[in-house]
Image (cartoon, rainbow, N blue to C red; front, side):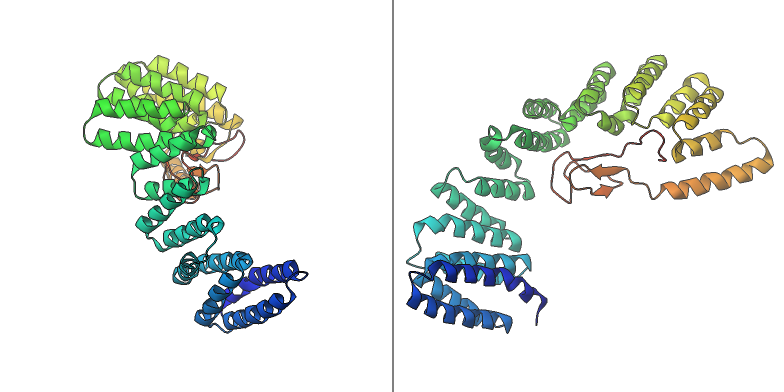
Length: 386
């Protein structure tokens, strides 16, 4: 017996509920319904889905109260990847001449889900649009249209639908719209249309003032145009948007300061940033800045003190590389550095705050849960090893 047949339990439960519901007022109908339903369930258990579907589709026309069982069966097929069977169920329902109007939108939604699962986005889009004609407030239809346009990278259509939902849930829909505008800004940047890039990035910030991605786009453009002062100001504003995301731009920020020969100001800003947000791991960043501005000894003294307060593999590795002295010690330090490097290869650099997906590559859209802006740098807490 196929493993998926275990999922028939919800159908049996729905069937028993149906019998109980109709017991008092429809005894003869109940008897006929019971016989036909058990026959259909028997076909399912014997892996004869075609015969089972024929029975269920005929039954629903004689008693539309059974439709919930059909929905349950369709979901089981869809969950198990048998989209053709799910589609057949829902197409059979929608084609019935006696279909009550109150069920039409629900069936269209289910059929749309079937087409989505099969990868037929054009058909799914048409069905969800048809649902909106009948029920213009259908959130399910709108959310699924957004998913389709997002999959097809049709950002303008995604924005149009999302804006209609914005007022109902701005904290969720706003960040989505902001990322859609950022996608369009990236495209404009690739075409060299800097004015449009900036326009789209500012639109993103209007829908989500905390959109780090939009700030990065604007800062990168300012830096590319040679305006490092403006770029620094924008990069630093990210601290208020999301302190953890400063780790995404720290190298770019340092480059802007370096272009302006502002080493002292850079060190002052970084030490302040570290004091304000102790969970940001900036030991090695500050060591690099000190080495370039004041020499290797200053970096060693800084790391030697910090490593006791906030031990980490990365800091230890850097300190070892600084403190190589004798020929004999070189071999020991080299071996230690190699060992630490191997240990750090298993560390995770980014993690989704919604579903826990982890990666060493940064994504604006989580590949696991499809949430925008939820993948963030893994910060190191005081006392923890990096």
